[in-house]
Length: 487
Image (tube, rainbow, N blue to C red; front, top):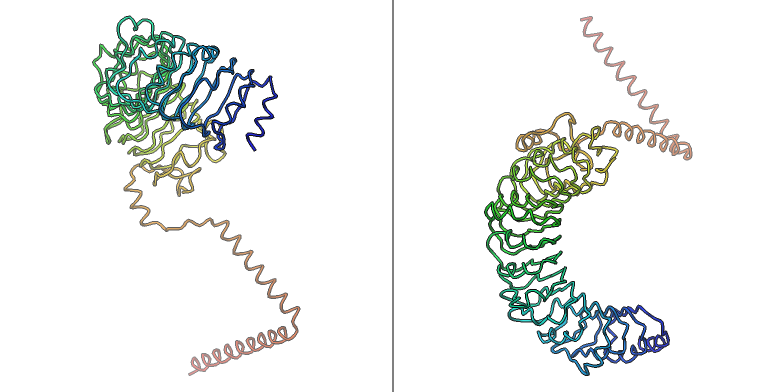
């Protein structure tokens, strides 16, 4: 069915975009049908079943092709080049995605016949050994290179005269989930044009490489998640971070720093997004002093660090532009301070999975949360406060018995709740439901007596018997008392 449809497509001589992704029925037999679509600029064959060795000559007729996506097509082994004069026809190809196949390292040298490439994705292929930059020497226009999860180890070698020419236009480099060591960053300092660098999930260890990174003056985004970094550089090395005037995003999650790293990062002049999830020893106190020098920060993620103590609002006093704050999965205690309303730009907030207690901030002040759910805090739901057993008040289901009091100690509140009733009755609802029940019962009883004469007769006889019984009971009781007094 699909092949028949493609035969019809072959008549569309002006077709520029063709997306055939996510079709397991498509195999290599379909490639000849594409040769007539010479106007194609974008071709997506990702997640199909092309299988086997990749022959770029199969696409040589598509001389206007600018983007080719062959992600997860089950290619394996070699990257076949047949007829280099035909390959030169693909002179307009700028983006090539070969991710999640089973190519070996020979694919890299084969790609040298495509000098027009600006974006190359080879992530998730089976490469081994050290990375050799000279294999990419012919791709002088490359701006984005993704080699994540390719099995490289050791360092990122750029040697000799190549240092000034290879990757001189490279802006985005993704080397995550390999086995590079800490020397990789020293090699990367020869790439000053880099704006985005991903080195996550590499066993680098040692202190945060502040001095080495300071050479990447155009860097805008840095990801060092789970790189086994565990120390802070000296103050002189930290001062070199002031050269990174464009760096806005740093991700240091899943490492093991001491709290002094925050003071070091505060020297990055334009930092806006800081990820420090699970980055400190569990149970340490909250690093208040480290955050006093941040002013432009917009996103701060500090979840899953086990910080102890109360929420230190003085640490966030300078965060006039903070939009996202995540303090979930810590050991914070005490109440949520009403001064949090000073963070007027907040759009997302989480205090979940702590040991906070007391009433949520007053809805009548700047934190217009309760009960109308107004202003920017109106988007915050129960999920922002869940699993804090001693917090109460909307949007939580747990109600506070006395809104004028805020619990100061969870243990005191626990003892108090042991002496309180386990239920909480709304008296208005109670009286309303009771009266309604009585009215319904009375009307139902009256309806039965009205519609059934026999039951009505028995009911009246019963009432009459009760009246006489009560009368004679009272009469005998009064007579006996009278006789007793007369004696």
